[in-house]
Length: 435
Image 1: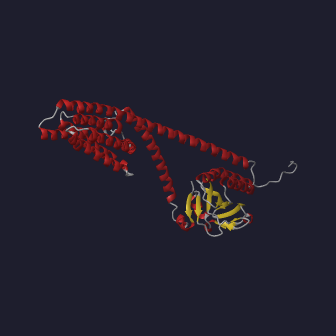
Image 2: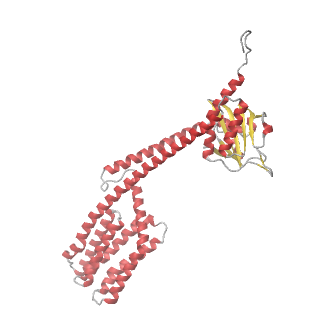
Image 3: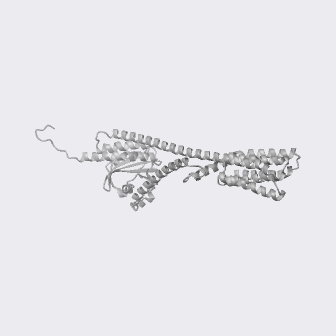
C-alpha cells in the first residue's frame, strides 16, 4: 500500500529517515498481535464450549460480547412486543373494570393493575430511546420487580376473592414471560422476583397479620422453581449457541481470508507471467523501460508516466508515456524533484496538491496537472536501479499500487541484466576463426 502525502510536507521526509525502520518494526508487531488475538479467540471459544457455561464466566471478551448480544436481543424483542403487551393490558383491565362487580375489583386495579400499567408506560418510553441497549436489563428487571410485587400483593390481600385468583395467574404469566421469553440475567432476575415476593409477604403480614401459605406455594414457589430451572436450561443453550456461532463465524472468516489470499496470489502470478512474457528475449534498456512503462500504464489506468534509470542521485529519463517523448534522455538531480524523498525511504508514495505544470497531461483541448502522482522505487538489494512515476486525475487504489510494486521486483532483475549486457565489451574474432 502506497503512502499518500502532499508536496507541502515534502521536507519532512528528509528529517525522518530513522522512522522507516521503526515503522516497519511496528507493522510487524501489529500483524503478530492480530494473529495472536485470532488464535486466542479460537482457543477461548473452544475452551468455553468444553467447560460449564452457567457456573463459570466465559473467558476474555466473550462474556461481555455475549451480554451485549443478550441486551440487543432483549431490546429488539421489547421494541417489537411493547404494543402487543399494551393492547392486552388495556383489553384485560378494561373488560374487568366494565363487566365485573366483585368487591375486590378496586383493590386489584390499584395494587396489581396500576403498577403493571406504570411499568408498561416506562417500557414504552424506553423504546423511544436509541440507546435502549445500554439500560434495557435494569429497566426490565425493575419492571419485573414492581409488577410481581403488585400482583403477589393483590393475591395475598384479596384472599378468597375472585380477583385474588386473577392476580395469582398474572404472577405466573409474569414469571413465564421473564424467564422464558425475555431471558434476562438468570441470577439477577431470580433474586429480584424472590425479593418482590418476600416484600409482598411482609406487607401482607403487616396489613392482615397472616397469608395463605398453600396458595402462595401454588401460584409462586412452584412456578418460580420451574421457571428458574427452565431459564437456566435456556440460558445454557443460548450461551452454547452463541459460542458455536462465534466459532463458525471465525472459521468462515478465516476461510474467506484464505480464499481471498489465494485469489490475490493467482492474480499476482498472472500479472507476473504477463509481464515476463512481455519482456522476454533480453531486450535492451530502452526497450525494457518502454515496455515496462506501457504495461504499468495499461494496468493502472494512468494518463501519463515516466521511467527513470537511477545513477547515484541522478535520474535519466528512459521512457515517457502521455505526451512527453521529448524528455527521453534528459538527466536531472533527484534532490530537485519529488523523487528525492522516495529514494531515501524506498517505498511507494502518492503525492497530491502538485505544483502547476508538474508532469502535465496534455489533451486535444487542454493541459491539466495530475490529481495524484505515484512514485515507486525499483530496488535491487540495497540500491535503487530505477524509478517509475505515474500520474492520473484521481488517486491510485491499493490494488494499482500493489500491481506496480509487484512488477518492480522482476523489473529490477531485468534492468540489472540489460545493463550488464549493454556494458559487456565487444571482442573481435581472432584471425582465421569464423565470426
